[in-house]
Length: 78
Image (tube, rainbow, N blue to C red; front, side):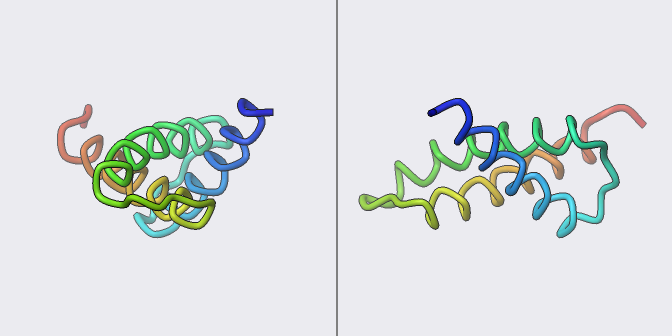
């Protein structure tokens, strides 16, 4: 169940992040961006917030995915 939840959360976070950053990606890339963002955001939020929940996890995942997109746009292939 944990892997399924990670994929669902990653898909949602990736969707929101790609819309905020106005990036066009496929479904797999969107899910991977969201999962990477969930990992980054989860690490950051666990350090900053003592109480975590589904909403905090989603916010962290979206912020992490936005950061990941920004890094890729800044330093990725042109």
